[in-house]
Length: 441
Image (cartoon, rainbow, N blue to C red; front, side, top):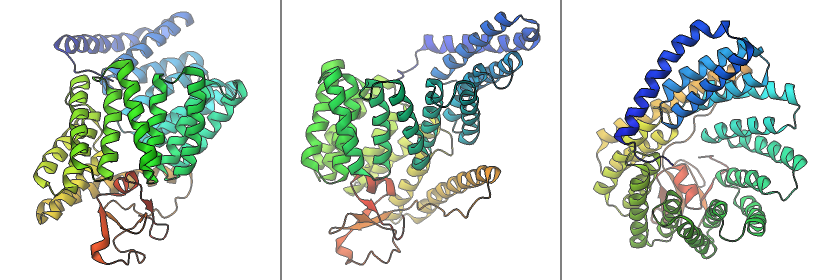
């Protein structure tokens, strides 16, 4: 996780950026006259510079370097060489970081085709390409496509490695996460128990990699209402993180935030707020005040305040979270949409309808642009089916049901006193509710 950028680091970034600009001008002139071995050296240097700029958050500059690296790779090796696939993957990573998912997907798929043709469908490089594409789909919520890719990765690694090899558990964990995001909690639970058993046997009970699996299994239990099973896992994850890194570490803050969410679900608001505040303080100290994870903490605490009717405090935190997400993410990012929608709901609850309308229209505008881009992308591959606009408003459940619904769903028939409102589909799923198959909220 990145720490706040110091004055010295800013100076280094400036020097690197200036050097890259000069280097690119030089490359345009001399690259074609270089012998093959020099071309390879130049290509490697450009790849390293692109990744360095990426790590510093200089995505636009990094993309320019990566484009030049791709051009040199194609001119030196031809369009179907594995070196070209590597350059394609680097540029795709940068497009993904900028929220340009359509172009990133195109590049990832081209790299995959090159490596499959060059190495065969069961090569480790093909598995890495599949993982890159899966992570892109996961960022967009395309869990069905993501699941099939992780299944392929698992099959490749099972052929190359022992079934209980620690590397295989990494992809099992990723697949379990996809099951969780889809609301398939029992499947996620079963897979995560296997992952934990293998990791504990090979790595021991207190290894860092166990923390992620513990947190995810705890979330799966929480989503099923198994709070007694969930809490000890969150606490164990906290204990491992504290033992290995101390309390002031991003991993510890993540486990704190998760445990706070469990207490919120159980109505233990005072304890939940205490943990949310501690997680926020740790994230601000270790990652800087404008980090994306800080926005997550702010949004989580704002949700807590909203559920208690503490609207002024919720508004302040939602706005700060939105400012961070707009700064570090692309304008069309799903997290931006969620925060805009949350503010619209908050203002509507206070009767501040003009403000509610403003933020709602902003969220809908982004959704419509995203849908248009997705539709255009589908049309280039096949005749696009009619795409139903996803539900982005509040959803509702009752005290006596685990399903959540759109407000106009015919299955939502209980008396008004029994209705439970969730700010969004994501909030409902996080609190253990399951989408109604009839209205598909």
